[in-house]
Image (cartoon, rainbow, N blue to C red; front, side):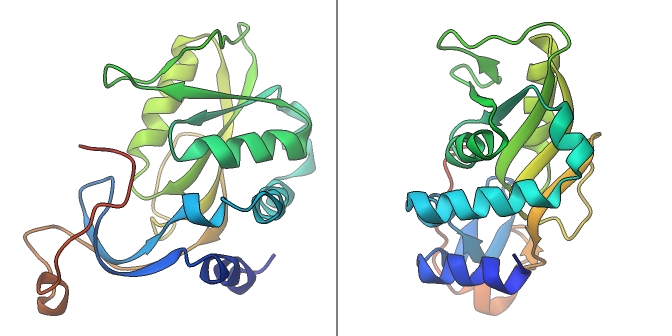
Length: 193
């Protein structure tokens, strides 16, 4: 799938939004990709997951034992990537602010994990999720995501395979362009902080 074909999927789902958005990182943007909306259609979610898997080297795909995703955003795409790989898909939650496996999920010592996110901007959630997997005994060998918003700058400590890389400008809250500052900000993501 080309970058334009991926963006066409977002447009078709009404998931490429324009306005003034507060990202999970706290930074601001005039554009937001609402992955939950693009993934609400199971056939579209399966297509995007398969395209993401196909971006990874075959040797890597063969090493993966299990897929793990951080809740909330990564659950659907993680599940679909698990399906495409023929692997179980677990998810992390942070009921007390720190990622952990719950609901009877567990990793075997040394189990090879593919971390899956919907959108990566600064990589903070991904790094925290990778640490949680290590604490649970697993080894994250790579990360996949639908969207890399970092302009290729994110460092996760493992190979990173986004389906599409998008370089929408992002701003600190105290350094907004006038046109963006004139709009009422929205926080469409799942994180409250």
